[in-house]
Image 1: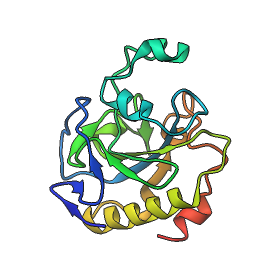
Image 2: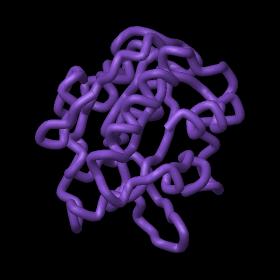
Image 3: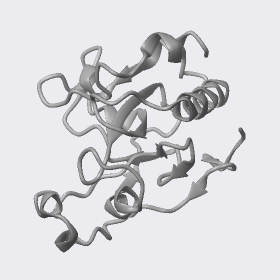
Image 4: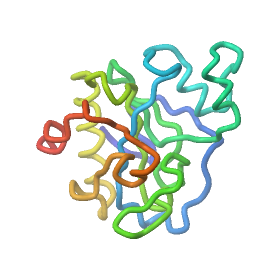
Length: 179
């Protein structure tokens, strides 16, 4: 894996409109792991991609009506086959964490990289997802000096009153022990 201009060369880069400048683009120091499936508990297709591009057709599922006004994104999305989609360059602020705090510092979007895994809090993640996530994380640690294995959290860790992802099915030991 190789990063060029803050984008993984091996990713399918699709620019989301849901980002802005970080207060300090050299202060990237946290990775946040999330999960998403649209509609919930359904995998495959382009619904997640369309959601991050503000192109989700709300009439296609009742659930979509409730999220139609959300403007969110992530830096990376890893689907069930391990394919990597990038929506926001790492030096920009993706809108993934919402109201959040890490070690007493609020606004995690300002200094974090958001990685979404296609999944939910219950189903096990795939081997292909772990392989891709580990490769991606190793390269992020190499490329951004303030990122290390001690600064990797779940969305539930930075927004515990609101979020539960990536959930109990995420194998933190498998992930972190392979970095």
